Image (tube, rainbow over all chains, first blue to last red; front, side):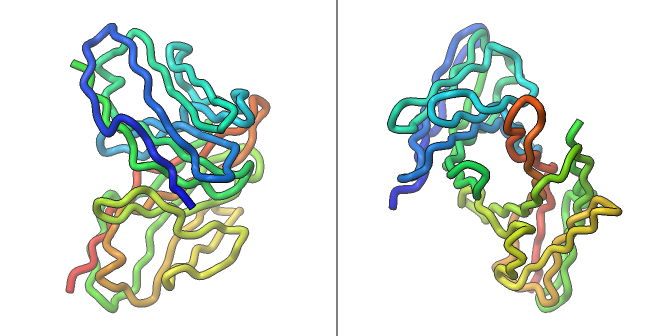
Length: 111
Length: 112
């Protein structure tokens, strides 16, 4: 059984740029959730995808968007990057309403 | 708004001593309650969930709906329990899945 993987491990972007983060879900999981974890804080829910549709969304602006593909992998896209977007981005996969399995995260730094 | 309070940012206890990590939540509806743990250099992982009522690694958590608390307890702490612990309710709102709502976490350090 393959666990949740995320890429890249870390990256540096400039304010105003766009970024795409990727997540491969654990085998058999059809639900992917994304979280943002700022330094010293707990993860904050961004959104969740189930069978390629957005299934729920946290308090994040529309410049945070996502996709889920037929193989249940997922992307998180952030447009017009701001300095406050610097954080660890976590992806978690699961069956619906079941335990979420987290990936190692992508560390994004916006300068 | 959904909110989780973990009042202790850092909790240090000696090996063999009892441990209690506090969690209070404010959540509309009837959420399911989880504790997640992150050991050093490892990814976030589930420690226990309320509905399973299992004791994992000696930890238990009591849900008190009246006080909206879900405190995590262990009678005898072990050095390998040193980690970051997050309380996280989960539920649905009118807009769909809410995702896990994490507290800021408690850093538990077990001293030898």
